[in-house]
Length: 249
Ligand SMILES: C[S@@+](CC[C@H](N)C(=O)[O-])C[C@H]1O[C@@H](n2cnc3c(N)ncnc32)[C@H](O)[C@@H]1O
Figure 1 (tube, protein in one colour):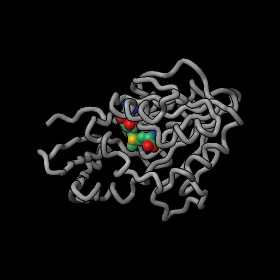
Figure 2 (tube, protein in one colour):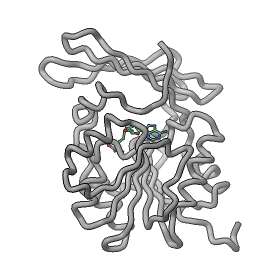
Figure 3 (spheres, helix red, strand yellow):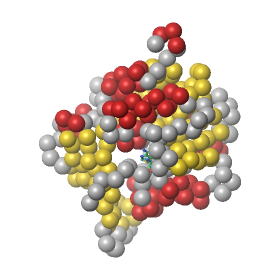
């Protein structure tokens, strides 16, 4: 089986809401992002998916644009957005920008790590910087790699999707390359289907350094969208960056 890109295929798109239940912290993420943008401001979501975050933001009056590499996820978003409140673009956010600027750009749920080399991560952040208007903000949500970096053998876990379906997840780590190979296998009575994806995890302070090299500087870091303090026991972070003033570069 070849490891393709991290775009969600049709099967993953069909179970996405069970994988990441909307009740978990979507409302808090939407509140957090809304606070950063001016009323009716322009918001860009990289890896917009089925619109979990983008649609509630658009309902609050923001002008929301989303990029995603998955036709299946954008089709799901389109089905939930018959009036086209969210403007979408099919593309790889590590390679292309929209050509316009935004008040806020967001990259949530560890999706930054789909850029699987340091150079791809740098290019992704450089593109974010290019798409921020003066005074713009960039939010990035990611897990802290510490528990995974020490993983000695593949980790196996299982999710309940519905009464007739489960998902088996495996995770193995190549520590010296900071790479993580994940598999999602859906067992639902039909032939099991597996999607593999590769992530390059990065520690928060490495992300800050890459951001600095891309013209962004850290403003705030929290443990979650409700602004619990980020501490040495935090397992993830929500970080906010802003363009570095030209004079400080
Ligand atoms: C974990 S989902 C997050 C979706 C949405 N942001 C949310 O919070 O529900 C990651 C999304 O990123 C997309 N994706 C992965 N790699 C990408 C890339 N290089 N360029 C554009 N989209 C990508 C996937 O297709 C998927 O829709």
